[in-house]
Length: 400
Ligand SMILES: Nc1ncnc2c1ncn2[C@@H]1O[C@H](COP(=O)(O)OP(=O)(O)OP(=O)(O)O)[C@@H](O)[C@H]1O
Ligand SMILES: [Mg+2]
Image 1 (cartoon, rainbow, N blue to C red):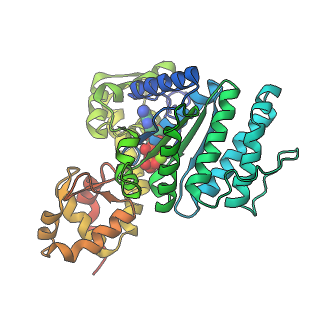
Image 2 (tube, rainbow, N blue to C red; image 1 turned 135 degrees about the vertical axis):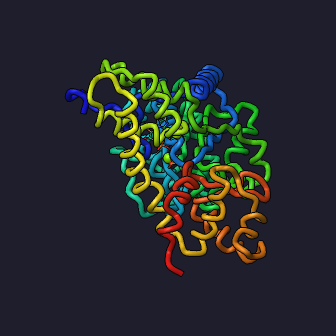
Image 3 (cartoon, rainbow, N blue to C red; image 1 turned 30 degrees about the vertical axis):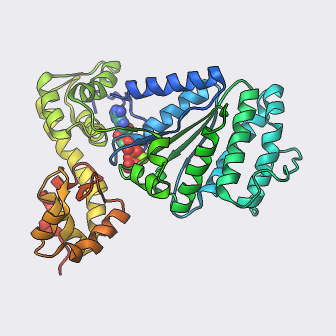
């Protein structure tokens, strides 16, 4: 550790980085949208942000949510999962947001009166056994959000939230992380609901932000064909050299620690701008640095340690969980490094016809390890996976 100076770097899932590098453009656009929605009291097109594992989707979504909270918005945030219906998760999080509204000013509470009642009927339909007390009595709004058709009920629930927010002079942000994980029928219902809300001549001031893996746009399109036109799609990716430097140098400067140019060259090359690995490098380099000026040797030692940690935590677990057939498939892909592989070429490398490898392909897609960036091609969802397989895959492959 550098002279007992606390380590600012934060490798890990969803951990707030000391500097959110390279995302100012997307954040500025998001804030512009938020302000426009609040000013007009009218909803905007829903957003989808997709990107590879560990590029910073969760921290970006959380930053957007924090900004919305700071702007006085009602924020409903959740992480979709395949094991729980989206509607139940939504009910739980809308409840939390409504409880906050209930304890805000009298004006806000009054504005949300109808939304409480609609929520009650929505909740009784989707999660009747759940406990949702408000500390005051609420009658369900009969005939609202209780049809049993999720898309209709969701649209009515969200509209009622949006209208309440409009009356209170604000807006609603619905932010869903890992959206690709939600069951297909739930995504279909969500698409229909958002589509319906958007068709109102004066849509309620609701903003939707969904984040997920690069497969998310096609997952949504499979659920409803018009999803391609309905959402505004953006991607987040690896950091440029400038942004990687910013991610490392800016937090260090705050602690009066500097990086030599040589050290930066070494870490830029090793990290490839992969945000998760940049944080891991920053943390380990900081831990081994001998003085307040980080040099190339510090960088090399720290990078080695970071690589060990990331190999064990990120890559090895995924590799070990794979079956032999899946490992062979991934090893064939790894020959293209991180570039997308042609499915037909993978089959040739495995000495099989394409149909004979389709089970492994499907199961890897299902497990979220690979995705189809375009028709006929496959790529890893985790940056650096190919490199890991090249370094370790051969010797650790399951015995056949
Ligand atoms: N813009 C950024 N600048 C610096 N560090 C970042 C940035 N974005 C993310 N990180 C760091 O990268 C790591 C991964 O971030 P995060 O968990 O948000 O990624 P993710 O895309 O949600 O990953 P997953 O697909 O696994 O959910 C964290 O340690 C985070 O602090
Ligand atoms: Mg995430």
